[in-house]
Amino acid sequence: MKLVGGIVKLVALLGGALVTFVGLAALAGSVVSSGWGRAGIALGVGLLVPLIVAEIALARFAPDKRRGVTSDVLAVMYVGFALVFVGLMHAPSRPLLQKEGDRLAHAGWNRTAKLAWALAASLVALQFGATVADGWRLERERRALEAEREAVFRAAFPEAKTIVDPALQMRRNLADLQRSRGRAAANDFLSLATAAARADGAPAKRLVYASGRLEVDRAEARK
Image (cartoon, rainbow, N blue to C red; front, side, top):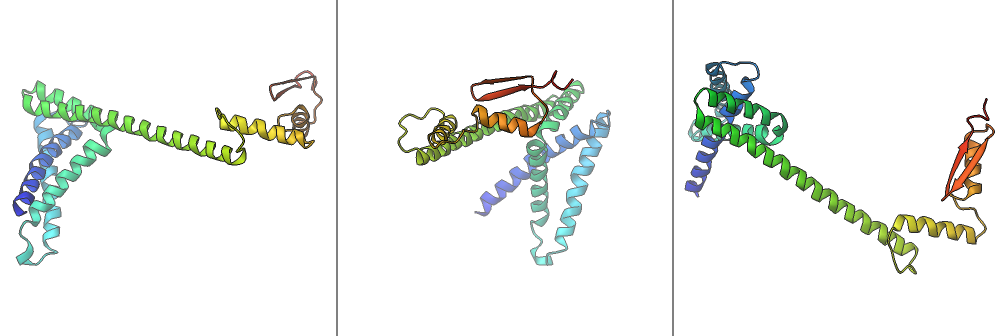
């Protein structure tokens, strides 16, 4: 078990540190054009900040329990930065990594440039996957809503045999029920005309009623 834990920590340290330094260099590239300047900022921030945090963490442990604390802190911070930079900040990180890869390739650091480009490509794949997942989630929600609407319709009108558009069929059935009881439906001419008169008392020049919709033309009547 300790061997597995050690291997995981080693992978986190090496992989996380590599992604962290490339990511920090890409961030520094937005303000510093010099290759040595970007490398210095990346190494300085990538080493100094985790070591300060590790020193603070060591102070909380007894001397006999400090073994491995520094490497644990470094591994967590490197992996955490990599996840935030590559995962949560994938939209702004991708162009930064692409530009850093171009700068590294121009300087002759082809292997590191390939890493930057690979990270940028992984962000494209991540964005595509997130889009597909979001589309799948929305489709599931749409189907659930459709099933819920159909269930409500069947509960209200159990005699219905064919359901094509539950919302439209329910409006029509409700209108039929209102008419059968001598009440005007909401989309009947009388109901719509009454609502229009209450909304605006100005005289109307023309009324056009079709398919449950009423158009009121008052443009010239107000002159």
